[in-house]
Length: 305
Image (cartoon, rainbow, N blue to C red; front, side, top):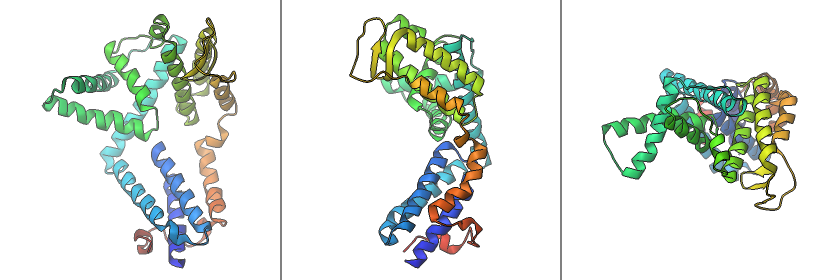
């Protein structure tokens, strides 16, 4: 049992150092989960009951890390794709809610068309070399970066399909929903777009000033068409008073404004870097980073027994 505890402590230190390498949001989430799991095991009177889960978590992290950092080209391509999607979403939201026309670049148009082709392929069942190439591009340059960035993949893909339908030309994704009086879809889009702008701002990839402009536009549409909006399926229309389900008046936008007003201090990269040592100290009950624990050793690489 002492050996298992030693391995768990070393892993926590390793996970903490890996967090400093600016991993993808999904990898970061898995690292924090692994730290929490190993810390809970150390606090348990009998760590042996945790060993299968600890080994599984460690193995999954190893596979995930190897996927993201398979080679220099893979990592660079993934980072570039994540940047392109973050930029696309920022500019698309400015178009939809601030009225700034946005014509996508050739690369994003290619990814949009690639995404739209997936629907046609599934509907027609057509196969061939072109479709295989399109499938690979879709998996590697749409699915992979969206999942790693922890953005709402289904929501972003709907935006990409709309872009493909317009052939990349400027156009609103919001006005057609209003014209069609499709309030359920409008509520879903407003809610998802609010969540996206919150994530982008938290990650410092969207300036606060731009976020506030977008949120002002979202709030304007929400206040015009909804008396209340708590989620994609729980809202009250301003004009008819129709309500899908009982809920207290609530605006998600206001909570986003509060988060932006606070400056996201607790989630800023510099703040996370400063707090990681303290986080490990709290998890272990002591500052293991100050101990002479080896980062790469045979005991660290083998499974707990």
